[in-house]
Length: 131
Image 1 (cartoon, rainbow, N blue to C red):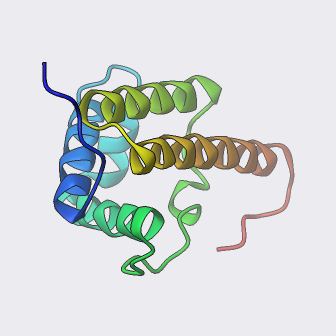
Image 2 (image 1 turned 180 degrees about the vertical axis):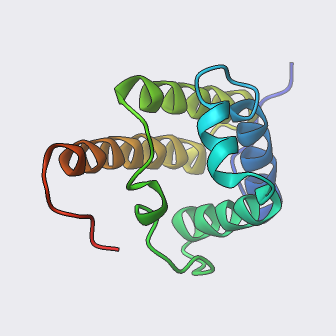
């Protein structure tokens, strides 16, 4: 078995994102949530995710936006985030190894934790998310 390389460029990000969201779209727990929201806009969503990860991993500022906003009212709980993190980590580990791969896993886990806390906060309070 050959040694895995690190995430090195936009093509690697595309492989990671395409593989990960391919798994999301087949996952019994997550597929309906994603497909119901994204519907037929998967190409646009994937393109946005390429830019997001390019910005996060390479400091190449191609993503501009507020990542939490589209997630603020999703019908998700802790088990959904746990599954997302699990699939993301497994995908990164199967495809890549190195500093950028570790950063991607750390960033994915951090985002999931933050999103989960913020969504729970807005579910339990009368205030609306700042959109």
